[in-house]
Image 1 (tube, chains in turn green, purple, brown):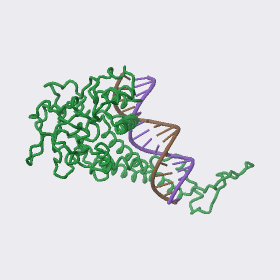
Image 2 (cartoon, helix red, strand yellow; image 1 turned 60 degrees about the horizontal axis):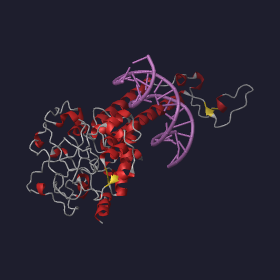
Image 3 (cartoon, rainbow, N blue to C red; image 1 turned 90 degrees about the horizontal axis):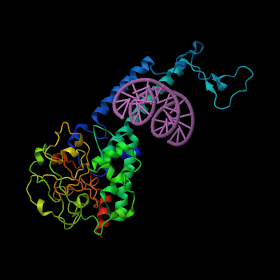
Image 4 (cartoon, rainbow, N blue to C red; image 1 turned 90 degrees about the vertical axis):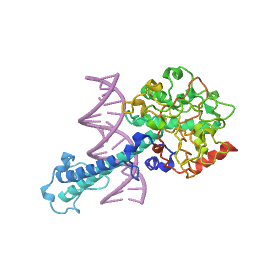
Length: 376
DNA sequence: TAGGCCATCTGGTCCT
DNA sequence: AGGACCAGATGGCCTA
């Protein structure tokens, strides 16, 4: 069930795809080609093993020459009914004839293959989960347990935002995300959010008052367009700091409401028409602190390039970019959490080329509910 | 080298 | 009988 849910991307918020993700080339069922190739290879291996008898217990390989005939009617109570020992209860064991042995081997091999596939599915689902939690890296994957913990914290944080109708400040947000995580993962998440670990580990956590804000989700103080990566030619011409919003909602929420659902939001900076899509502005929080200035690392070596808040709000882009009515809607519904002020600011650097931002999720009724909730 | 993480195999249990 | 799921065991790989 969980596996199915994780694999079913339609159940997940819309995720803009990073350039690196394109390599995954997922097939319809969410499996990558590599995984499918690997699966095929393993199945072949199993087929070969079935003939060679690899991976079987030694005792199973022992054959009783007396049982060469089909001994289905030969039953042994408890496996041993000789001597004075009382007969064991339970179903009578059948003698392992050669035929039964062979069938047993085949069953075991098939079960192994199924188990392998099941675990691959589970891992694939975990990979999908890694991509939608706030800290994603292709080069340094979160462990399974850390992924689950972070996901739980992330869900909790989002739920808290929805429940309270207030925006948390960055520090408390990161504290929430990092609750129960290991130190390395905590550092990673903090790095993703461009927050020094020390700045929040020393603070008491979970202060409800941190979810503050008189104007829910107003982003006047926190609107930063991400600086375009110097290495990204598509973004090279984007002004360094363009307010994501001049009024109203913050980036991630904009992306929930975009596509015409957000009355009053038409950022004047991006109202220009024309067929060419606007340059995307993002609020990705990147790990690459060193590349804040002009010394941005090259894409090939930029570790931080993968550490990203990939649910970047595309608030800088005008609504309805794709002409589908969905526009940029939802593509930022996620990590681009509106932070309250705690001195920490989110500086995104990654600006994704427009064509890298795939809108592969339909808007769900949930988004509509959220929309109506915040507009009532 | 110890410890963490992972993939795989395996047997048990439950369900169809 | 067979499949799904689970947990224990085991060995490999990697890193501090």
